[in-house]
Image 1 (cartoon, rainbow, N blue to C red):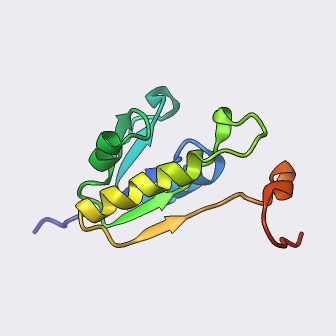
Image 2 (cartoon, rainbow, N blue to C red; image 1 turned 90 degrees about the vertical axis):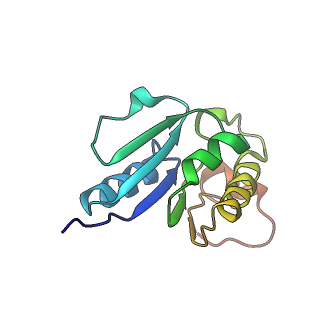
Length: 128
């Protein structure tokens, strides 16, 4: 009797939080789709599918297809210049559109807003 493995998608898997989530779900035996700009950042793993590309509708849709959960660990990383931008919110909108297309109803999001210099760009109060 074969077991069907649960499949998840991780965006931002090369970052500090994303790497930890990737290792956790792989250790649990999940199949994992990972979208990255640079596949050389990942060691091969039999349960890991690396999709190299950018945050466009087609590539994100490919990464989400077949998954039951999306982990959004996207940060601005090397794309940031210290100024406010909409990189993360734009990527999240495309993720949600792809999730609707593939009937994926669960997303787990990580945010680092309010950390370091980003605190001055928040609206409202964030306590330390």
